[in-house]
Length: 213
Length: 252
Image (cartoon, rainbow over all chains, first blue to last red; front, top):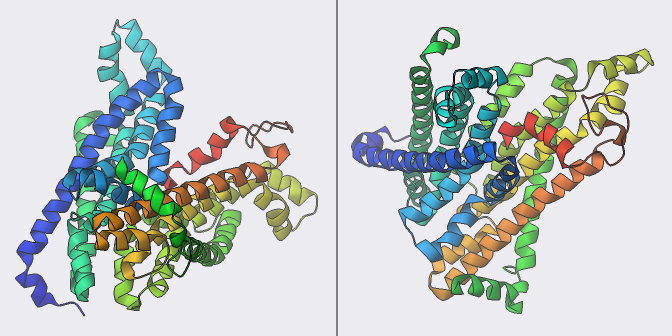
C-alpha cells in the first residue's frame, strides 16, 4: 500500500512541505503568544477584562476552522496572512487561559516576599510572577503548538497547509502514500516541538530540574 | 464589506432555500450527520465512562485516551480514514466524527462520576441502594452537568469537523464553502461567505444550546457541588457554572 519508492524519490518535496508546516506553526504560536501574554497580563491586573477577553477568544475558538478561513479569503486573499489570522485566533483561548491561570497560581507568600524586598511591579513581574507561572504557561504553549500543527493542515484549502497540502494532493490523485507521509511526519513534528518546549522549560527553570526529571 | 453583504444577500435569495442543494437540506444533512456521530460515540463512550468512573478502574487509560484525542487533527484523521474506507461522503465522515467525539465524551462521563462526593455515595449505600442504584440515582444526576460539558466539547468539534466532510464529497454546509472555492468569481465568493456564516452560526448555536442544557439539568440542591451547601434556588449562576468547566478546561 505504501509506495516507498515514491518517498525515496520525493524527499525534497516532503522536506519543503515539512518546513512550510513548521514555519506556519511557529509564526502562529509566536504571534499568538505575544498577544496572549499582553491580554493575559492585562486581564490578571484588571479582573473585569478577563470575561470579555475569554469570551471573545472562546467565540473565535468555536467557529469551525474551514468557515473562519473561508470568510477571510475575500478580504485577505489566498495568502499566508489569511492562514495566520485564523491560526493565531485559535491559539488565543488556550494561551490566554494559560497565562492568567499561571499568574493566578503564584503563591501570595511569594508576592509578599517580593514586596518586602522592595521590588517594584516590573521587577516583581519578571523576577517572581512570570518564573513561578512558567510551568502552567509552558503547558499551554505545548497544547497550542500541538493543536496548531493539526489546524495548519486545514489551510491547505486556502493554498497553504504544509503537510496538509501534500495530503490533499494525495487525496486528489488517489495516492494514499502522500496521506500517510503527511500524517506520520506531522505527528513526528508535534513530538519534536513538544520535546523542545519541555527542554526550553528546564533551561528557563534550572531550579526545578532535579524534581521534574 | 460588499463581500459580506453579498454573502447575506445570497442567504436571503429564495432560490437558495429549495432543492437538494438548498439551505434547509444542507442544514438537515449537517445536523443529521453530527447527531448520528454523537449518538454512536455516546453509545460507546457513556457505558465505558460510567464503568470506569464508578469503579475507578482504568482511570489512567481513560485520561490518556482523552488527552491523546485532544491532539488528533481532524483533517488528518478524515483523509487517513478515507484511505481505509475508500468511501466518499458519510462512510468516511461518520467514523471520523465518531472517533473525534469519543475522547471528550468519555472524559466527561468519567470525571463526572469520579468527582461525586464519596460521602454521598456512602450515604446511598447506607440507605440500602445497590451499586446500580447508586449509579443511576446518585452519581448520574449529580454528575450530569459535567457529563454535558464533555458532550458540549464533543458536539462543537463534531459540527465543526462535519464541515470538512465536504472535502471527501460529503454533504452538509461544508459543500457551500468547498464549492464556493471551486467556483470563484462573485457567485463563488458569495456562496463561500454564506456557507461560512451558516457554519459559524450553527457551531455557536450548538455551543449555546448545550450550555443552557447544562444549567437546566443541574439539580437544585447540588447547584454548588463540593461546598456541601444546602439547596439555594437560583444559585446556579455563571459563577457556579465555571467550576465544572475548569475541571475539563483542557478538553475545550
